[in-house]
Image (cartoon, rainbow, N blue to C red):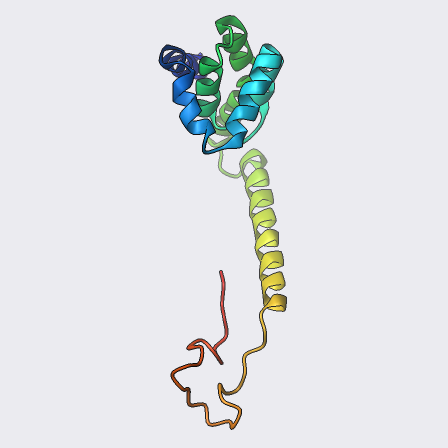
Amino acid sequence: MGNTAGALIGYGAARLLGSDALNLLSTRSPHVDALRARLVQRPFVGMLWMRLTPGMPFAAVSVAAGSSRLPVVPFAVATALGTLPATAACVAMGTAASSLPSPVIWGPFGAAVAAFGAVFLIRRRRRNRSCPAPSSSSRPDGSGARSGGEDPAAGMEAVKL
């Protein structure tokens, strides 16, 4: 109920401000126009999928729906249904947190750490392959002295995190 009430507040504010408020955003991002077009074509299904999609900005979807003049009933019902899975997952995690050795807590956490670690290692390996090997000196004669016109980073290993 809290998710739906919060979404209705954003929806109502955008509805009162009209589409002019969203037009300012759509000049900066083509995604806003695509979002609005989806909501106009299939209001209930579009809103439901947007609420079910992880990472979709909650407030931005509410504002886009309000400024697009999406009917309030499909918006509210789709928001209520679309937020149920995430709410149930949060309740399950909160319940399982009462016993710290629970696999409900450590299983997803361990999987997330492993996934982030794998991505980090893969990206680091790719960067190391693309970086040229550091030279032993910055001058052909091997003296290592630099003249004013050379790159100050020559001869130093580039490290990117």
